[in-house]
Image (cartoon, rainbow, N blue to C red):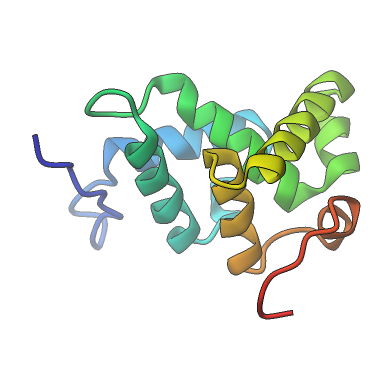
Length: 135
């Protein structure tokens, strides 16, 4: 089956696609307002989720999982922990560390997306000693 494309909507006449609405909801659940995330980042994230989906569509929890990584990277450790709690912040840190060790995981790709879009907090870059080839 061909993969469905995402839609941003057009002039309020055509609505956003379901996958983007799910990601927006997941972002809100980690206290990251969707308007703070560039649309290009959101489109890239939903495409990555589709690429890594087991079936035709990503599982509903995949959106929340991606939002946790995006939120941590964009808000920073302290801000993320302050809103979502220290246990979740520590879990996300562990996920990022594991992803960076293996490099090809979805979580690593999500971190890379925030770096490429220049929306990652400098404190996160410093904490994980992240670098890009452009540096």
